[in-house]
Amino acid sequence: MIINEGYDKLNLKHPFVTVGVFDGVHLGHRAILDHLASTAKKQGGESVVITFDPHPRLVLSGKTEGLFFLSSLDEKKKLLAESGIDRLIIMSFTRDLGNMEACDFIRKILVEKIGVKHLIVGYDNHFGRGKGGDFKRMCECAELYDFEVEQVDGVYAQEGIISSTSIRDALLKGRLEDANRWLGYNYAITGKVVEGRKLGRSLGFPTANIKPCDIFKLIPADGVYAVEVMLDNKRVPGMLSIGFNPTINKDKSGRSIEVNIFDFDMDLYGSTITTIFRFRLRDERRFENIEELTEQMKLDKQLALRLLDRTTALK
Image (cartoon, rainbow, N blue to C red; front, side, top):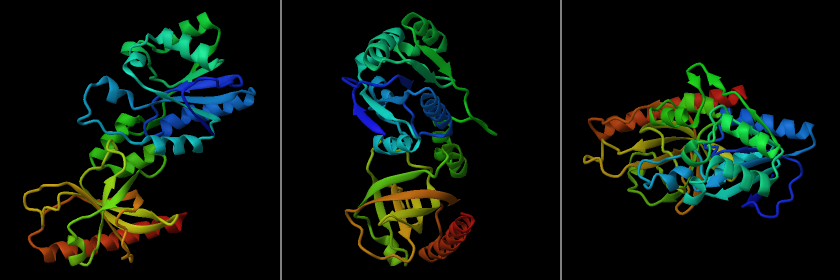
């Protein structure tokens, strides 16, 4: 996949285009991307994805509090590359761009800069000022500027249509398995290992405190998770806690992400690691004393190993 920052001097070959934020690049997005790639290939064209950085909501909302997303730009690049598209164009999102009328965006960028021949969009795709560019408006512009436009149906799970919003909501409510199923892969967080209070070591479970590399990366609900950690390109098992450590931290200050990597006791301070969320084990809770907490952590480890071993055996 070729990545372009901006859209000048591209010289695209019969471009088949889709436009979107693609937060998480989930199964609904994959349906669009698969159709884009296969259609372009059949007709001898080039499959092109246009996305935006920063996320439009960060620019248009006027505030960043409470805004969290499923994927960083680097993660999005990797996921889009895996989808088999030919080219990714990353547009810098500004207020001027956000205020552009839909048909002006189509004419000035998709037609004049990209040379679109075939536009493929999702079931709920809107763009342009006030999201005025719905499918009907796209069809009107396509007729005016002589290109084809096609809409791909949404992908449904038993719980409803799959969307970035529904996946974010599932993660925040502790429904990890639903989120992973709708993503089509296991949710992950990449972060730097930072200095912590080293309480886990005193309990026999040394932990690495993780600070996410992307400040807008969504952190799942507080609780304990069975995870895999990428170390030297290998996946190693562990368990991860998100929360305030209420048994030890009485005033509930300082939410943390701490991972205990099983049978591993090397210094990781300053390293960047990726933690893959496989199963949610339980809610965070306050224990009466340190001894109760330690016994529960032993049970957590046993359950995590059992779940991770089972899924490894099924591969």
